[in-house]
Structures are given as C-alpha cells and as structure tokens.
Image (cartoon, rainbow, N blue to C red; front, side, top):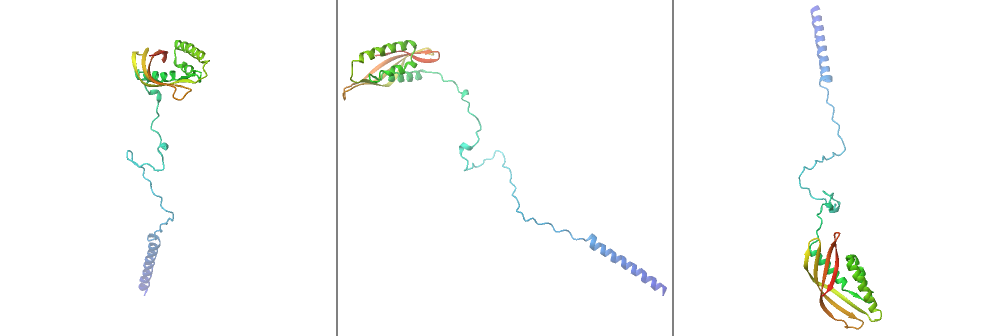
Length: 208
C-alpha cells in the first residue's frame, strides 16, 4: 500500500514537470512572430543618374539661348586686319562719289564733309576751291548740281603701308533748274592716298 502511494506521487511529479515544460514551450519558445507593419504611403521612384558621354535628347521647353555657353568669344584674339589694295580701291570709290556730287543749293557742303578724310594739304586746297565756287555762284539764282556714281577702280601704283594711286571710273550727271537740262557722261578721277599715322587719307584728287 505504501509502495502504491509512492508510485502515485512520483507519477504526479513527473506529470507536473511535463505540463510545466509544455507551457514553457508554448509561451516562450514557440511565441508568434510580430506581423510586419504595412505603410500606406506610395513608394518613391528611384532616379538613376544618366551615364556620362551618352546622347540626351534636348528639352523642347528650353530655347538655344537658354543653354549655357561652353566658351566665351574673345575679340582680342582676332588678328588685326591689314589694309590691302581692295580696301584702298573701295575707299577711293566712296570718296570719288561724295567728292563729285554737289550743288550750289547745298553750299558745296560735300567738300567740308570730306575734310576728315583729307591730308592737311588736301584740306587747304578744298577750302580754296570751295571759296572760288561759292563766289562764282553768288550771281546765279538757277539751280545747278552734279551727281556722281563710281563704276570701277584700279590701282595705278602702290607702296605698301605708305602711298597708293587709284584710278576711279565714274558716271556723272549734271542737272539744272530746267527738266532734262543736264547731261550724263563718264569721267575718271585719279586719287592719291597717303598713310598718315596708320590712317589712309586722300592727298590729291584730279579729274581726267
């Protein structure tokens, strides 16, 4: 009888240990993992940088003037233009047209306008020439004028950087107070240009 009680006590102890072990397993070792949180915010796209040296289409909203410049133009790097024979011919032709176009009603202002393109010797000659023209036209009340247009020009002689003689062929037309009172004709003018302190100035002009 005593042995039966002893066996029953052992059984109860063993059963209690098993129950305790089961409880520990369920609540400690087999604990449920937490449910991950779910974010309701939209996922932001990841922008990958463009690889270098890859062609990229231009933005249609950007005009060429809005694009940054890759360099700055420096005019000081330009080679200084050297006056050549063609330049001197053009200067002589422009001078011949203004020099040969005048009227008594304009008080021969074309000669005074051209003085900045003349040497000192030519300016003295022009002043005397205009004084004579004004004196001779004081008694004339009728209009008289001449219009000159340069047709061509060629170099007669050229000393580089010093002196040049240019022959300019012009078409001239005289006009007066009466309709069709003038006449048209072709006339050459020989113009001498001198280089004075880097500027080419007219030193003489002779109608042929």
